[in-house]
Amino acid sequence: MQTRDKHARASWSRRTFLQASAGAAAMGLQAANAAPATFTPTWDSLVEGYRTPDWFRDAKFGIWAHWGAQCVPEMGDWYARRMYIQGNWQYDHHIKTYGHPTKSGFMEIQNRWKAENWDPDALLDLYVKAGAKYFVAMANHHDNLDAYNSKYHGWNTMRVGPRKDLIGTWAKAARARGLRFGVSNHGAHAWHWFQSAYGYDPEGPYAGQRYDAYHLTKADGRGKWWEGLDPQELYTGRNIVMPDGFKTIRSVEAWQESHTAHWDEKPPLHNPAFTRQWFLRCRDLLDSYRPDLIYMDNHGLPLGQAGLDIAAHYYNANMAWNGGKLEAVINAKQLPTEWREGVVEDVERGFRENIEPLPWQTDTCLGDWHYARSLFDNHQYKPASTVIHRLCDIVSKNGNLLLSVPLRGDGSIDADERKILEDIAAWMARNGEAIHGTRPWRTFGEGPTRVGSGMFSEGSSKPLTAEDIRFTTKGGVLYAIAMGWPRGGLLRIQTLAEGSALAPGAIENVQAVGAADSLSFKRNHRWLEVQLPDGLAGSPAVALRIRGAVL
Image 1: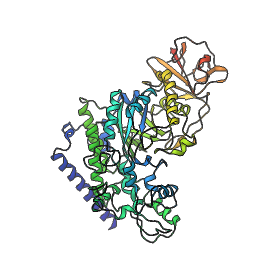
Image 2: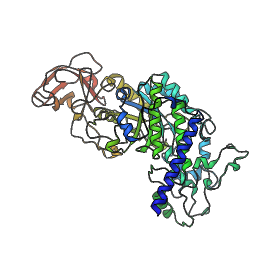
Image 3: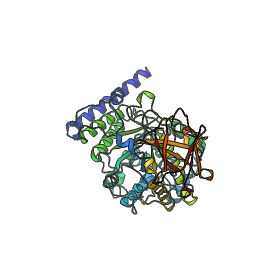
Image 4: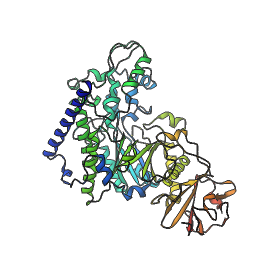
């Protein structure tokens, strides 16, 4: 009886969503629907019809502005959720800096986001110099604020905080520099992630008093900066509200972790309006800005059928924008094998052990996803050498690297981030030939260091060394990239030994990438031995250009 009732509610929610979508189309709200429907909203259709576009396979390196209101406190990730959980260090910071969340909730932080020092042209010039071929901007996060001129969600950056169309501005600046432009969508999790805003302190002088989300209504905004906006549309409504009666910080932490922090991709059964609005907002984002890529912060596609509807719409619309050619990329995570051909799988902060048959992507960050001042103060970002090594490893295995460079709330980057990007730029200026436009060779590489595989594996992976070598190939050239300067400047590559099963042909010429002079080399049954020029000493990675029948 309970199971039948659950299915009935799900069916009702799905019908309501489809009726709303059809009604919107009938009113002319999605012009791109006139495109031929090559794709239908099923995984079978996505898998059968999708092929990763060449631009993405050639690009190899992208930079991401994972930038939103949660960067304002400069306290790192998930601030909008954890500021509502007593005992958390971000809660303590909020109390000290902004006041108690019964009176000063996260919507007030959103309005403090002013982007007053944001210079997208200067930032993108730096990203281009660093070798990025595509740029991704965050369109919304779990705090449910749209960073664009949203037609279906009043809580957007035209009305709140910066009072600017951030996505539109990023898109124009990126395309002016020849970059492919992408957006990231994280909003499908707001319905459960943001429910901490409906809780209360279990201890202390405010014990039992509900936070701002629980009691604020549209009427409360009269005469205030948010007049005309409904806080319940931002906080998503009372979906999973913490019950009364908790008396200890530990019990609240446990309840929130088990009930609202789970990564749930299903639509909320009791709030079909959230799913409907997510669909309309995402479709509006795609149709208005026509991105080349959309990154979904989801395991699979978000919100059940709604995610499939968006995927099919995007692919069909993208073909209409590009004269029938599909140039779209959808990133999604944790895909079962049978779905991987339908989108481009993303591996958050992780690696692959071997060459993947399908193109894929790693996304990682110099620090926290949202700006954390402590990482700058303590100089704890990933250094340029680590980024370069990960890029080489990923590209050798048929992947791309999407690197987040955290922005402050004011839209600027700090001195350490700038130096890292400049160091990457210096390496890419010489060695980008071995990265951009390449494809995997017969093997990804050699060396003693094994990297982890899968989501979040970067934390358990050891640093690569000069004995670790990665291969790429392009235009009749084999590139061998050593992850550091070998002892005595003598690079030995066992895979390219004389008589090697992987490289049985002759080697005719070896050069350092970025130089025209040929290098002295010897080849025997143990290895190919190359004497590197002293001028490359100290480089985080040394790339060689190898020609001959060895390919």
